[in-house]
Image 1 (cartoon, rainbow, N blue to C red):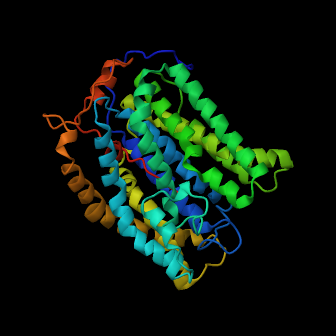
Image 2 (cartoon, one colour):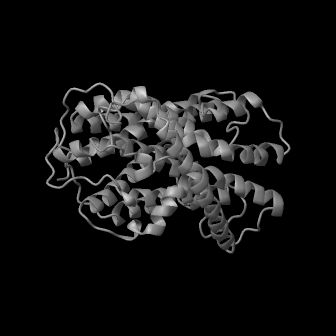
Image 3 (tube, rainbow, N blue to C red):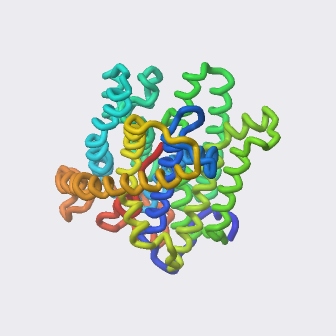
Length: 416
């Protein structure tokens, strides 16, 4: 069934609440961001450059797009209409802030103190509360822990989700798809207009503003609702993965005879394009998992790496920067790949400790201290009942699950 239908279709089998393949994919997206920071953007950036993967590793910076789409998908996948909005907000705080606060001092040391740069404390404080991307004059552009700019974007998604999810659940699938497509088109237009009319620093701020990334989140929500309503697309994972590899080659192949117009449009459309490719990759693996197929992404090791990937994402850039200060940049050589893999292994060991002794226990404690006035007498998350929305029996079963945390089932947060 290649087209989206106007309404949901009944599903014969219940939807799985745990999607291990998405958890594993999360690790690969985080590793792509790590590779991007490790190899740098050119010149004397990054810890070392391997010609075998550079400049193609630059696409890793757009691994954050996968996380934004995944956030929308997972939140909508386990959406509970009766959940009190404050319970949702409470759990998100317990999910993202503890390890963020633990890692932040090391990042401030690496990117400010060890770098011999003055610390702009208002900017650092804005990064503590994850609102740094809302202000155009923070110093530096990515203060505190630079990678947490994506958490600032996620914060907007969290704030809006309890408000827009009930509306999206009532909308027909086709209208949702058209809305998502319009949003991605607007994203392209904003990038183009900002680049053409604003000073470079202001244009970069506009392009990184949380509102600009909202269409990617909406795309994930739309995909989740479509799949829950029974929409399927005959699609093997190798097809969108190959499409992504081909796109990366075309985008970064410097010998390709681009005209200025084509080169600029590639730049303006890269985010929406990667978002669509990420959604197709997710769709292909989710469909396989729903059908009961298990593959390499269901392997326990990859799932665990996916669970640790939030901590990996938060700390990898700091470790790479400190290593650069300690040993200097490595000469450009494919031998750098072995160093990159070694650093990734060491970083994952650290992240296992962060996950085991910080992230998971802090979240558990925070969850157990959810204010009781936001819970119903049965201990479930409460709130006002919503009017009936078009939903399948399996989707209803998913929404009634007592504790389907999207971040724990198949974590969704952030990179870059």
